[in-house]
Image (cartoon, rainbow, N blue to C red):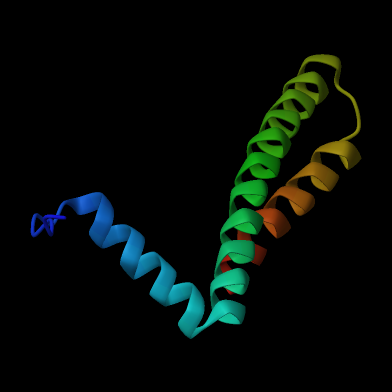
Length: 86
């Protein structure tokens, strides 16, 4: 059988990926978990920003109290700042 000496990118990434997982599996899992958490926080951030601006628009249009606006502002700022701490 003829030995294949051609190195393609997929083979290199596959070898490196396997070596990373074997060398430090706990770190790799924690790194992936932190990436998932950051992605979820971006989604929650988008949702809360929309709710914040909707509640602000509603409060201004109806001369309503601003307690809901302050609540969404606080929660949104927490969601924005917390992932940056991690």
